[in-house]
Each structure stands twice: as structure tokens, then as C-alpha cells.
Length: 377
Image 1 (cartoon, rainbow, N blue to C red):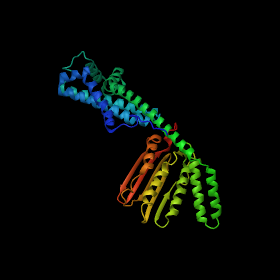
Image 2: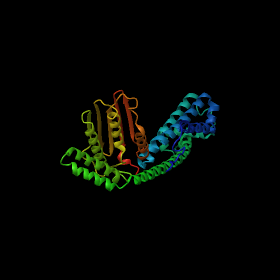
Image 3: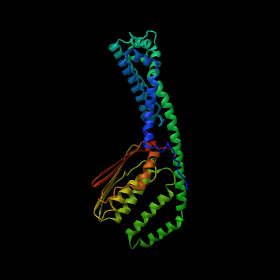
Image 4: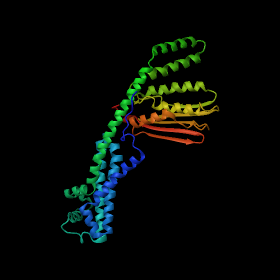
């Protein structure tokens, strides 16, 4: 019913990704190659001057990639101004020290600026460097400005464009997520085919079996709890973490009853959970369900499944491992793992997910920072 947004911001091909990452280096090289002072160094000092050009290419490139692909995502986009400012100032100082050391080397190698025009700006900066030493950045405003002009001006311009690009990409991702949520809500409404009738029927079955078959009654009760949670408590973007844990317990209990004789099961969940902690619904259960699907359903032999979750403050660690059958498609994650991967990328951009396949074992490890939930969704 709803067509998902298709945009090069969200779905760049491999060639587009490579070109997008290499383009800043090419732009920097073009800009530096046409820079008057650097061209003057090359003309007067030949190969040594060209080394200076390469150095001035490496420094801005490192600033661009370090800031654009690490610093921005870790601090700027997470609204952490103080660490952001500290890293910028430290980088600024380190770049100045590198520039200072490179000019000392240039002086010792070719006698800079003896063969360079005494009227040049670069020669003036050299005299200031000699006068103020390696900490001249903090003692001389002209050196502070020169350091920016020398190594930060071009990457700052490129970073501004990258910031606009990232902002546009985030807007499209938000729009895509909204569209997916609308589709989910539509499917949810379609699934509401008189759920009260369904629950009343389950309650009737529970009442009929409670005395004669307590185990069957317990299964019906657990199934009713799973369906109630799915239909009524997961309508929002996030749910209480302790409710998601209870959902996992009930699901695992049902699966364990179904395969008691051929399943060795281990489930470790925190007993006490901060009620304020929230998580996107069905993020964790997908990996647990996948373990049962491929570790149990595809094998008639005795199998094992281990699920372990522990919390460190607001960081959640999940590990799910299962014995792996020898069927060809046993390791296929299917559509559910693909979908949960997309949700993790949108809701938890800092998550860490690793999947390890061994001949007889399949392991999933997931780390989520519950304190960095994208609350705008």
C-alpha cells in the first residue's frame, strides 16, 4: 500500500559510496595544488617542497575524515558539546605542532626561508614560529589564525557540505521510518479482528483444562500473555525493558515445552530491571526466535540453545547461541533478521552486532546503549 522512499542518500551503491569518500581527497588535492604559497615552496625547493604539499594534503584529509566520520557522529550529533570542543582544541594544537615540526625540518633541510622571498607571508609566519616556539599557537593570535588557514580552512568547507548531506540523509531516514510505522499501524489495524473474541476463547480453553490438564492450561495462559503483549503493549515506539524480558521468558517457556526431550536450554535474564529503561519492541526476541527456528526446528537430534542478557548501567549485552544443524539453509536469517537490522540502524545507530558461524555453532552478540534512544521516533 505504501511505497518506501528510495533515495541515493539512503541506498547508495558501492561505486557511489567509494566515490563519495574519495571525492574530498581529490578536491583537497586540487585546492592545495593551486595554492600560491605551496606552489612557491615547490618551485623553490623542488622535491622537498612537494613533500610539504603532501603533508598539507594528509593533514586536512585526516581532519575531514576524523571529524566527519567519527567526531560528528560521536559528539556533535549526540549533542555533547564539551567533549566535542575538547577534541577540536586538542586536534588544533596537534596540527600546529605538526606544522611547526615540518617547517623546522624544512629549515634544516634546505635552509628555509633563506631561498624564499622575505616578503612572503610564509616567511613571516616562520619568524613568528621561531620567536614563539612550539606553543606559539597559544601566544600569538596571528599564528592561531595562520594554523587555521594552513590546515583547517579547506576541510572546514568540506565538513560544512558533509553536515548538510548528513542532515538531508537523516531527514530522509526519519521520513522512511515514519512511513514504515504507518504501514505497521495499518497492518496492526487489519490484525485487530475482534481480539476480545480470541481472548475470551482462550480463557474458555484455560478454564476447561485447568483442572484436568494443568500443563496445557499453563501453555494457554502463556500464549494469551504473548498475544496480549503483542496486540496491546507494543503500539508505541518503545516499551518497558522488563516487559520485553517477560515476553522472552514466556516465549522460551512455550518452545521448551514443545521440545523438552531434545532441547538443552539456558536462559539468563536480569531479575531486577530499572522500570524507566525502555527498548524498541521485538528487537531482542527476533534473535531468540531465530535460534529456535534454525537450532531446533530444522533438526531431529538433541540440540542446545543459550540466551544471556546482562545490563551495565544503560548498556544492554545480548548473546544468543545455538547448535547448528548441517542442513544447507540452517544459517539463513531470513526476512526477520533483515528487518531487525534496519530497525537497529535507525533506532540505535551506535549499536554493535556480530554474527559468528562455526561448523556446529551459531552465535549472535548485540550491544545496545539504551540511554541513546532516538526519542524523536
